[in-house]
Image (tube, rainbow, N blue to C red; front, side, top):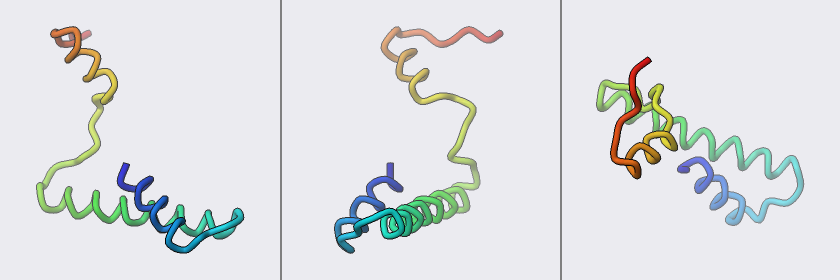
Length: 70
């Protein structure tokens, strides 16, 4: 989400047009998100990425139960 927002804002600010300019802004937005993730993981000492799927967790939350272990 951060990467997408950063990319959108950079694209608008630079008035990027065409594939090459948009590719450049996408890479910059991705780098911002990557750097933020690395900083958070370093600060907390744990990984942001997990094996849990966010959508599956939301579904469980709505149903009010947890997924059974295999």
